[in-house]
Length: 409
Image (cartoon, rainbow, N blue to C red):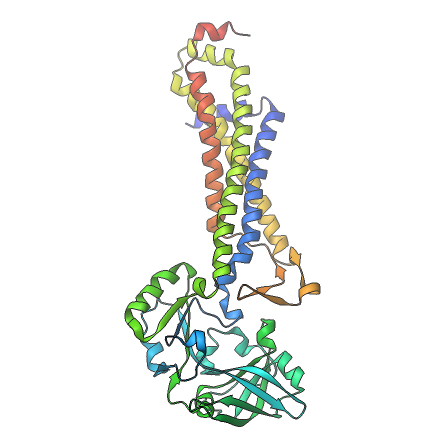
């Protein structure tokens, strides 16, 4: 085998220009697949960064709550419920008391989304809880403190330490109001949350709404988004008709459709690129074999078996694939190194730090990421395409008659 590879290496460089074109074609093909896959993957990996918007891969609510947002439609004993859920190791889970309301300061008023939370566990599913622009985090036992989104605080002209009144419709149908003090100003990545979000403790929200120990939302983030459907099915079996279990794909159907479309598009583009690589390799390998018909005839005449001739041609294809993969992966790694610092696409000047898209929060700065597993799969496909393409020329040359081949021009 070593001797054959040495012979194939030597034969590879007998026509340097053609070999370099082949290697370059394989390398560029792999690089293009990696580049497009990484750009699309950067967008689609938003489902693995749901904590930017405080969303979950799975959300559990009382039946009908999502349609009507009635504060009386709630899940009982949320603390004990979240601790007993059948979730994969590494999952994060939190619960919320949710209501719409009106926030009023001395300078104005505005409609808000009020979330009653347990600050410690909420921080595991909502990154913005700890993204303080001013002030301090909300303490679990602080029933008079609030955290405000930075744009909301700006609109109401509120600063840390000042008072804000929250008005809601209570569970009994009456209007409830409570006075709170601003403990901190947070920076949600979502523009919508930044202009509307108010965080209080769960106990404070329950008191203001006139509720017992209940919650409206259980938010679950999984270590792997691919496990979502299986885990959701287990939860539906556990809760039965007592709760409604929805996945991120059901909550954001447009994002799910986009993910499926992108997957198909990547497959089509990959097949197109691999097809071009295969045609180029087939053409040049076939020409190489035809030009060396006399050489192969002499090899057969002096006793070389057909399988040795095949192995020699396949050895050349092996070297082309190896050098092409090294070139493509090298270019991909270089691009990753350059693109992981300054963003490849930057729309912050036009769209701000982020934007809401299909129910998700998308960052306006896109960087290049090449996951190791995806890169190795793409490299393996290039190897396979190159070697499979070389089979036909190798098989054809193995069937030539020595006498005919020696006398061919």
